[in-house]
Every structure is written in C-alpha cells, then in structure tokens.
Image 1 (cartoon, rainbow, N blue to C red):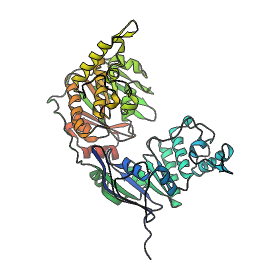
Image 2 (tube, helix red, strand yellow):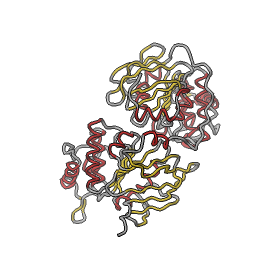
Image 3 (cartoon, helix red, strand yellow):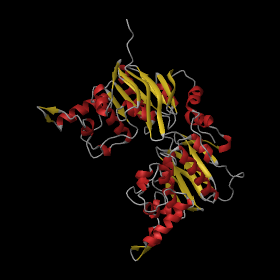
Image 4 (spheres, rainbow, N blue to C red):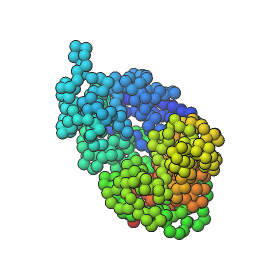
Length: 505
C-alpha cells in the first residue's frame, strides 16, 4: 500500500523582488497532525515563504502540492478554500468591528441568500471561542478593546471558522505572558490531535523543543535543513545552521580607542511592565551602543521608552545629567534626542510631501515669521542637511515617496541633523535597504558618531549590531543577559545568548 502523501509539499519554490532573491529553491513538506517549525534569522525568507503559502505572493517557480495534487494558490481566498489559514504576527483584525464580525469577515453566515448578522454570528463565534478555551471573550465586544492575547485568540477563531486543515502561526507567542503561552500550546495540541497541521514560526528554541515535531531552517532564502527532529537536534547545530550569510556587510573601521568622557545619555532602572525589566545603560559622545536580541526581547520598546513614546513603569532617562519628563516625546526632542523608527514610512515620513518638508518638519519654527514659512530658507537648510548625507537625487523638491529605502532613511537622519540632535536612536536602520546602500548608511552613522553624536542602535541583524556598534547589550525576553565590547563577540555567541542565555551581570 502506497504511503500517504504529505498534507502539504512545496518543492523548489523561488521568489524574487527587485534586487533581491527572497526564496532560492525552497522545499517544505508538512504532515497532517504535526507541528512543523520554521526557523531562520530576519531576512532568511520565512515571511516570503508563508506569504506564498497563504496566496499573498505568487512564486516565480516551483510546485505546491496539497494532499499529493498540484495546486495554484492564486489568492488568500484560494488558500483558505483549500483549508490553509495564516495568523500573522501583526494581526490583521479590524479594531472597530466586533469579535463576531471579525471572525466571520468575508464569509458571514447567510440564510435564504441573505447575510445573517447578530445572534447567529455571535452564537457560532461563542462556540469557537469555547473550543479555544476562552468563553470569557464576548463576541459582541469590539476587537480594539481586547488585549493582545485575546486578539490572537480571535484570529485563531477566525481561522477555525473555515474548514481549516493547516494553520500557519507567525511568532504567536511574541506578545504573550507565560500563562498565555501555556494556553496557546494547549490549543495547538488540541488542533494537532484532530489532525490539523501547524507551521510554527518562532525565534525561541525552548518553544520549538516543547511544541515542535520537525524543524526546517532557512538561511538567505534557502532551506539549509529540513525535517530535523525538533526535540533532539542540539541547539548549537540549529544555531550554526542559522548563522553565516552570503551577503557581505561592509563596515567602517571603529576608532582605535573607545570613546571616553561623561555619558550624554544615561538610563537608570528603566522598565515597562510586561515588556522589559529594569535596565541601566550609558552612551557617550562618539559611541555607538547596540541592543541585540530577538523579536519580543524588548529592543524596540526600550528605544521608544527612552524617546518618550512609551511611558515607563519605573526608572528615568537623563541627558547631560538632567532627567527627562517620562512619556514625553516633546521633552526628549527638546533635550536633543532623535528617533529613526523601525517603520519609517508609517512612523517617520510624510510620504506625499517633499524631501524638504520631511527634513524640516521638526524645525519649522526656525523658518517661520509671523505665521509664514520662509520657503527659501527652509529649502536651503534642508538641502544642506541632505547633501551632508549624500542623499540622492539631490533634489529637495522631490516627493519623498519616490526615493529608495536607503535615501528615505537618509531623509530621516537629515531631519535630526538639522534639529541638532545629540543622541540618535536607530531602530532597524537598514530594513528595506538594498545591500549597496547599507554600506553607505553604515558609513554615515559611523561618521556622525565620530563627530560626537551618541548613537543607540537596535537591529535584528546580528552582524549589523556587531559590525557597527562599539559596545553591545544582549537582550533575552526583556532582560540584559550580557554586555561586552563588540570586538569580543561573534554572531554564534550572540545567538547562543539570546536563545538559551540566562540573566548575567
């Protein structure tokens, strides 16, 4: 008797974007009732692969088989009709709709050809929530009023509202506390016992060992290992598979002597409940301090709290020895802090405005007279700042949306140069930036530091942190587990610390 084919088989999948080969002949097979874990560093191709599986991206090449038969997943609806549901890390729920409306969005209950709202939708939603062990969630409540963990349960209920046979979970535990993770694993266990397959993406190896059956590791768009036993493969072997890159990082030389002098930025006992534990750090003029850690380790939250975009539950931030008002971006900017956020298009740039306006937006009062803006002065100052960073094209009137990712990031940096900031906070500074432009940005950041700027850097790319920073704080689950000069660390050591480390001095 012929063996049962895998529920899902993806063979030789390729996918390219302009200038990037995101998937380069990836194979993945998933059996019914198993938890198949997908591992890899940021940029390894995990997100692209699951978007191909979800029907959101069309592969350039390769074959997808479902229960042994070739299929074309031309849209998310086509994937869902087969029984494939994807729960992304950034949940795609509609906050102003109710739980029941979100669960049935796009396939509302009908009777006699008419959409049935209200009681029928709420009743079926309640049954799904009860199945997931969360009968306390009110189907009539607005999703925007729920906690992150409850919203994730709603996403699972939406997946189960279809005849789902495979669920993709992208970093599902990132926003959960330990009790909520235990409940998540209970749900996964119940689903697999019913024959549902789960593709589970996580950076946390302890979770993989606890819940996974098999592991596939991606690196640089390729599957470097497939079908490894999740519970018995040594951690060092998995880490070794995840490290090493084909892309070269070209970093400027560090100063031979570490920066001295009094710190311009001091953080003392800073904490946010549920996000990161109390931490201390100093950044001196001319120094680049890097925060290394995985998704959910608290890196970005620390930066945003230092900047005043989040209010801490404890501790303080000091600039030149003077404490800042906590939870106040205005106070931070006035003290000389500038933030280049992770999502620059959504959080930093005015995409429909010119380069000039994007650069000058934080200093408009300098060019304002009696309520009127001196356009010539504004344009001249912005052009001087962008030329200092070699922003291209050299056209201050160009809409910022027409620039490349690297030049958009330069526009954000030029804004803070024009403002005269003394502490630059960089969150994922090269995300969405091509390889050639990365080296340019590295040189810009190093030069700004050499000119006396204090830089606090967050990046998911461990080589980036090690190559650019002078000193590195390694974070794991909201705690600093190691601090050392960057010269004393390597990628393997950092990944070891963030995955299996324990708090250390």
